[in-house]
Image (tube, rainbow, N blue to C red; front, side, top):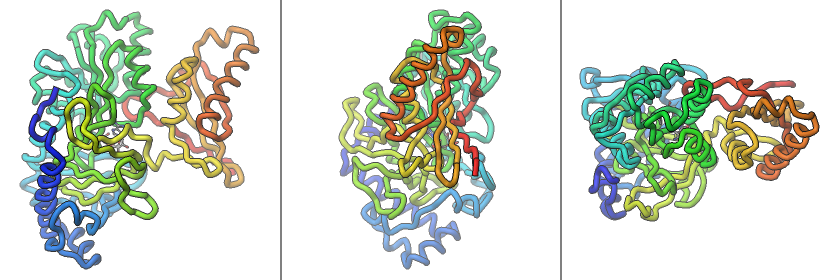
Length: 432
Ligand code: DLL
């Protein structure tokens, strides 16, 4: 189902024209209203007159998360405060959070973009959407909320946490859609089991999952456990929040709402723009944002872009499911590893629970990886031999798939902390 027949199906030439026009307007606004961009452009010896369209994108400076932190809280806003009607923030692990501001127009565009996503998942007026993303400064809850209202479905604004109550509400209110992180969806599935609630006791049919990296194997696992269709939604606060790109029934990558967010993939070391089909760091320019337009924002997410028209009929560029964030990359003896790769190797075997945690131990400046994964309780009461055989089997599969050697520990159910939002998959233990 296509929400915006015009903008989701533009020909490449039409999209190039639209993006070029919006880019030129946005650069003009950023240059005249944001000191930071004026200075950056002067340093590169350019002015808005040098930017005629998307062919000039690579003349423009990059923006980093650090730039947002350095200009905390409002330094990159491009409109007077009295035009900002909402603030959100994303808490980083270190330093100041990132603050983003929205004008009234930004908010209506955002709701429209989330509506595109939800409609693509087959969600409409007859649905009850339980929004279990956190409400607050995080963009997940409130961002989804207005998109749900836009498609005309009924929103259940429960926010995150209170897991047993979530399930009770799901049952009593007849929720047909669950929106939360994939890791929280798994936790809900486990808790349902504990409470004796079966998928057939619920009306749930679609999941709107995102805000953290998750593999295709995990998507299939959640579909099986909850007996629903699980769809991916991607976004980041710096662009708008959820709704930057979205899945369709073909599951052949996420469609980027590129009439609003101009995507590029770059080599993170040379900063050269890479062609379609090549893996690199995702960079976005928000060409329609008024409150805080960002030029060539480096997301830190790794992916591959594709420009072929999708079988679903959309011509919007597709990004492959994010492999991971550069921050979460683990380097083990020169090999780059992402948690999603371990996740795929584990889940494909189907021998364990989908709950895992990675420990990186640094010993004499060399990293070692230890993987913990939960297995069924019954295994611990069986003979030790069986447990050992299984450990070897799983260890070998992960090692073959990653090309490194690891330590593997099978642990009892509920050993690994459950998340209500974004799961923490990697713990660094410095043993130097
Ligand atoms: O997580 C916005 C969001 C809310 C997206 C709800 C989807 C659903 P931030 O907290 O700013 O915003 O975190 C953004 O999360 O750069 C990615 O690293 C990661 N991320 C978000 N969605 C996905 C996804 C929200 N579908 C950061 N797959 C991004 C993989 C994702 N990673």
